[in-house]
Image 1 (cartoon, rainbow, N blue to C red):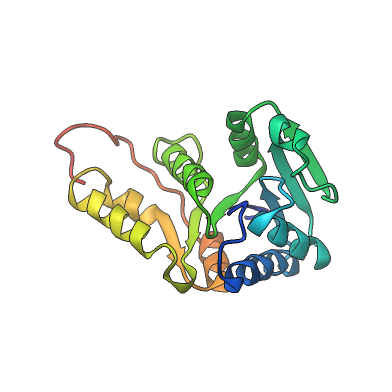
Image 2 (spheres, rainbow, N blue to C red):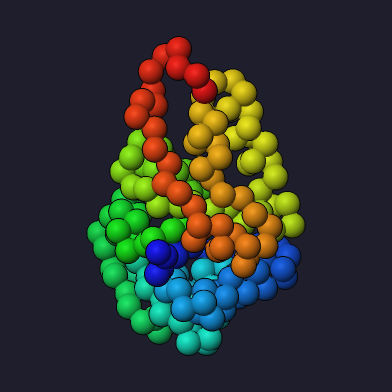
Length: 195
């Protein structure tokens, strides 16, 4: 059962108004479904839009932010709960501990870093929680194509390619995360294995 969803997204708002609209819709949808939001604790960009919308809809919002970013005053001051941690590594680990599922909204390098780390941790068995990608307006088309290319070249197994739950619609993505089965692979790195 999923009680809280970790959302990775941009600390920038992007250059199109639909990015902020998407973040607000996602935050409000989590709250309406009674799902807690765990995110990076920022007050700016899509992060701020996401958190504000979830709070406005009566949701529980937990932030996790490194001390350095908190000191630069970009941390959200109105959350249900805030954890200020020592480093980016500690932030990502704490977010995984606090969450039952993960979703990436549009973002840049930081969002991709978080998404691929949590996918890698799932792949090697550090957690068995579902990971989703909201591919709104084709934002992640190129990333999905790259993942398929990596699979075709023998670097990503089919089971791990399929473990990333991709959808274009918020409600449907959340439903699929709720119904996802854990990825189980006994051997994942042996040469010559079927990929």
